[in-house]
Length: 147
Image 1 (cartoon, rainbow, N blue to C red):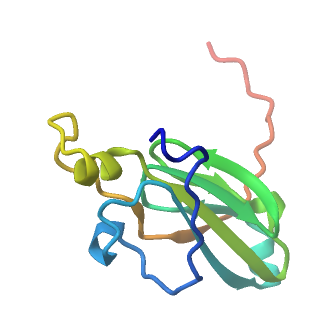
Image 2 (cartoon, one colour):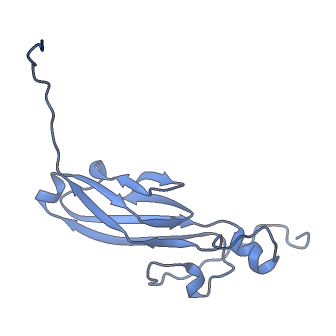
Image 3 (cartoon, rainbow, N blue to C red):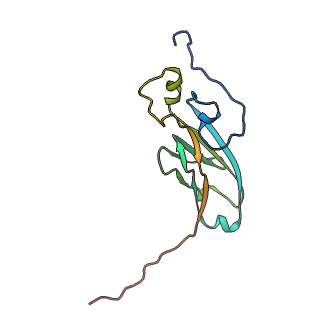
């Protein structure tokens, strides 16, 4: 560590990687983040509902952006985000940035009894779903007095 005076940084080229554990794609020792992105179209009927993005299973944290705006950060289950106010009719862009922990780095570089089974599972595991919920307005109604 003393020989390297600054953080080590590297950049990877964009690639298509399916949802799943990063360890299944030769990233066993990688501790850091990855960006997932996709586009989706909404009809007028979709845009007139409440829309929830459910990321399913994430290991470990997820930041969600829709159309360039940060919707929120999830640090634990459920990884669900109300994206109603961030979408529009037509084309929309989704970006999810996922970070794992240092467990992967330590498990490979410095094997330790402090890295537990399952702790190195990393990534956006899914399933990822958009849920369209009907908007319901409830109004108070005068009730008759009971005897």
